[in-house]
Image (tube, rainbow, N blue to C red; front, side):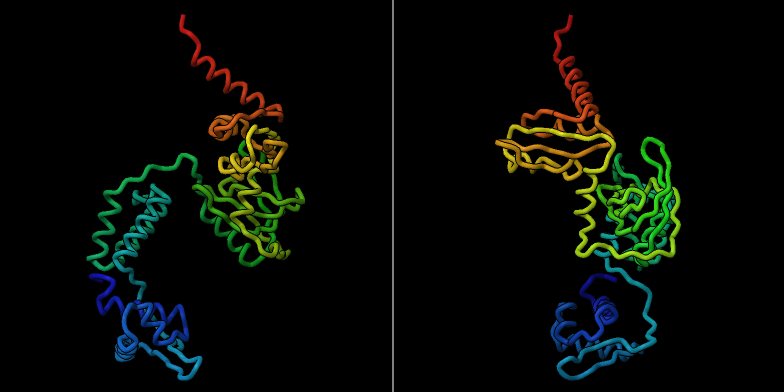
Length: 320
């Protein structure tokens, strides 16, 4: 399509609106198309002349809807939608620039199905744009992710086989509440019956998923993103206890939820949590907090901070 305001583009957009919002009124359709109400009614007439059955109901609760059994035309993207889609895919998965990549192959099919004028620009964007991969991202197997999402939708408990970062492998029966994507990593937020606690598992470390016959109900008012952020700072192998000589209000903006729970303590505050990687906790998280602090525990984190301090001290030592 030449642009979003062409008659053809607006007619196709009208079909999309009628499909997604049955009962839409003439003024609502007009607002969505960016035209007058009279023009919106004219587009409805054009669709009917083209053989698209658009039903209308009069009265207070009346509106337009597509007739039953309507066969819609193939999905058509506008120029901005197509370019935005390519940008989002490359931003989320830089490897999609390669036609041999799984997502890259799918993206190529989408581009080839676009109208020539739009497809040409989308193909050029894919060919000439470059994206640096996120070294911390880890994309799971699509079939594993699909199995977990299906269990979440069906509210069915699953038996997962999981392998930790250290290589330990175990099975756990869990209630899968949500899959959350966070900074290039995919997490399963769930209730583990093995631990009788909330757990956050990396989906790329899930080796197998088997749906069971047991159902479950997720917690009322669950905020999956907030729950994952909070849970990432608890339940890990090595405890952490850090005291800051600054008010909680000043320290809080520098503390990420996975670092633990920040609480007031006298004139300062204390950070209580856990980690599976004390060295990373010390080097990447604590070192970036611009306030004086004291590591009271645990031993692994104290050792990691001591190692880091020794490295920095050696960097400033006088040369012989």
